[in-house]
Image (cartoon, rainbow over all chains, first blue to last red; front, side, top):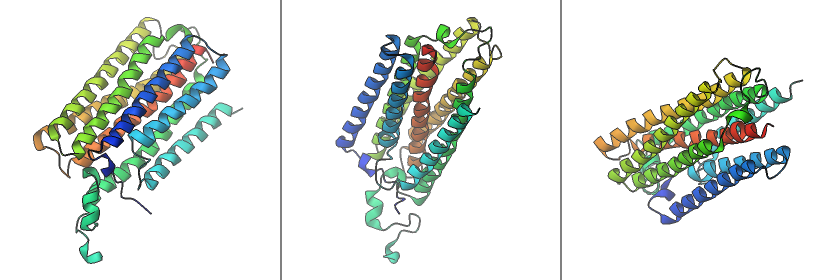
Length: 100
Length: 212
């Protein structure tokens, strides 16, 4: 059970900074692609919606894992906390959307 | 090993040095842990507002429809500002972990400036929509849109106040084990605001302009 919440990997290590910058570039590219696909109506609206939701999920995962350090060791409990929140959030949305 | 443990951190000397500045004290680590619990609750809160918006988005009545209203340019600039400010807040934390107060304050300042740009553009955006005939009570779509996006905007405004308060502390006291967790947590909050925005620009603006 690790609850050290260690962020020492940040400590001046250029390797982790390079990783953050790569994540940032990837996030910007995904965002640009999302806007570009919608602006040019590349696919049918339903297909675009599915792809957009997948892209948004990738953006959020990158943000949580890399920018918010959940991929580092000692982050089991934070992951459980935010994971539980997101899980119930999705349940709420599905219930309200699919309510007869 | 118990005898070697430090009174306030509960860690032995070796572990203490390996930990980053923000998580070096037990208090700091507990604050960060507690903050993640808060973020879990915030996720559910925003999910409820997203659910409300998704259910009511087609109920535009006589008011403007989302596909008539939303433009891509402004929303893309908003997205760019927020993702970039997320990166600059990481630079601030990185400088903090190296103990460099000047650089920390500098990057926090850049983050605040980018966030302020976002907030001002969003105020302009809402002002523009009101002039297009979309008041808060115009339609169920309007109410759910302003509530969801406005609530996010409120988070941005609150985050800006928080980051500003933390920056003042850095300028006055430098970086130390007391304010390092505060800096770290304020940037966690800022990242979370960015996380929510990623779904707002996708679900509200992009899907809204598709008319799905």
